Amino acid sequence: MEPHSWTIHEARERLDNGRITATGLTRSVLARIEAVEPRVAAFNTVCADMALEQAAAADRRLQAGERGGLLGIPLALKDNMITQGVATTCSSRILKNFVPPADGAMAARFKEQGAINLGKTNLDEFAMGSSTENSATQITRNPWNLERAPGGSSGGAAACVAADMALAALGSDTGGSIRQPAALCGVVGLKPTYGRVSRYGLVAFASSLDQIGPITKDVADAAIVLGAIAGRDPLDATSSARPVPDYSRGLKDGIKGLRIGVPREYFIDGMDAPVADAVRAAIDTLKGLGATVREISLPHTRYAVATYYLVATAEASSNLGRYDGVRYGHRAMDARDLLEMYMATRDQGFGPEVKRRIMLGTYALSAGYYDAYYKKAQQARTLILKDFTDAFGQVDVIATPTSPTGAFRLGERTADPLQMYLSDIFTISINLAGLPGMSQPCGVDGNGMPVGLQLIGKAFDEATMLRAGWAFEQATAFHKAKPSL
Ligand code: GLN
Image (cartoon, rainbow, N blue to C red; front, top):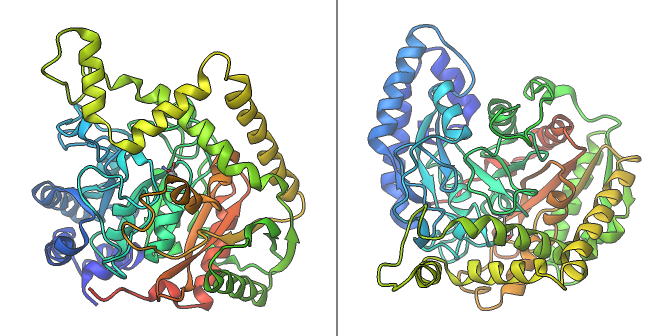
């Protein structure tokens, strides 16, 4: 196996015992990018020179005896996490030439730990979408079938990990944007509990929902990366001070007696039958490993999509107010006065989906409609959280499909925003409730495309979710399948 196809834990062992250098590993990954990126188009920016400099620095640290963590591991960042001196575009025309003067929390952690930053991956503009087709930069393709979408909004991150163009990547998840593309690209995607990972330097979409997390080749790697990025950050007031457990240590403890809940509302009419079958088979596998499985109910699930698209758009309309042509990015040059400049800048800079969300959110927040829409949505959000609290009185982990279908064709859903919104029907409740969720490969659909199993944990109990996911992986081989590119 070539180094670019290693997992982090495989690379870790070889870096620590000197069988490969960080430079050798990084060169292998850069060569892989050169070979397959022209077909996949996962990256907005590849930082080859910077990566090799960082690899040389990591090698010096390894020579000095430092070991473990992310030291010497080549990784990619979604292009909505700011990086000093490297363009951070959010795949939007409005930030096309924006080069941040400082690192956000994730780029800073990479440097502290000696990880190698390969570059910035494509996304739906400002992370709004489920296919990465809302990007203003390029169309990313699913490595399993280049005519199909990689999912979104972290489609570039999921595609680059699936295609072995990074050992792992960081994505952000507001309503499913780590888990859904991970499912569609056949890799592992973990959205941590709200507050587990710092959002400092993550360009805000919907601040009460956004969370950064790992996209990896297997569950053991998800545990490693989560441990490396989690924890309190004084620069993000919503980050939690709870101690970060050693997520790798508990992985092998087994799942005898683990109580798994399967919500009846997550197997719905209109969902793809092979997807439902694969997920049910995965749940049987977990049962075979000693877990007890019971049906549960999350009765307010049917309000989740509507609730999410009010809360998320309201917060987005406020967060995106800062792109005014004065402080960041693009400015329209031909305006006669300030108001005209604002309007022309935003008209030229934002794509149609972002405009749609700003209008929806502004409407939901406006005087006279606030009670009917925004306040109602907040009340529904509380009921959705209460469903989970009640369920977690009886079970330790919840198992569901990640997405109702496998990867769809490029262009298939772009004409109908509502169709696109339904891609997230199984992921958004978890953001509304602030809980951790993880998708991992568990089969294929009728088109041979990967299917994702979603495990949902109690707040701040990523460890149990990871333990269940790891046990599943040991009993199966779905995570080992690779696309042929
Ligand atoms: N697809 C959902 C949306 O369009 C979720 C996106 C996300 O998690 N960033 O809003």
